[in-house]
Image: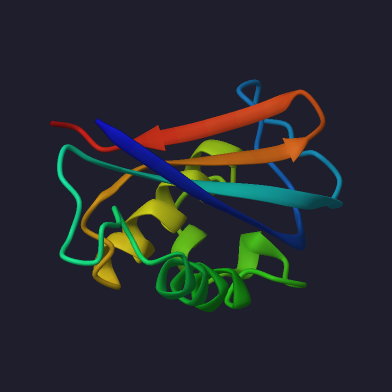
Amino acid sequence: MYTVSIESHFSAIHSLRLADGSVEPPHGHDWRVRAIFESETLDSAGMVVDFEIAQQNLAKVLSTLGYCNLNTHLAFANRNATAEAVARYIFDALRKAGMGSLESVEVTEAPGCLASYRASN
């Protein structure tokens, strides 16, 4: 199995509704994102995915999140803008953009705080 990954980042704020019903004050993060691609075979160019195309697609997705309040972003209108939800949103957006070999997306909200979403097989 071949695995490649790309990384990027964006800055955004959010405010989470906690399990006890309370709401955190708005706060910001410098979110780190890693998209991981896997394939048992390589394409005709000898790649799992073209890094440049993958980076362009990731940049396009992240441009919709950067410097915004995630709570007001359409993708999180009916759900908490948790790191888990952000990872799922990025994963779904990359798949929708044609990144079929995408296996998972990891999001680091703060140092040591990582959430990921993986394709279900």
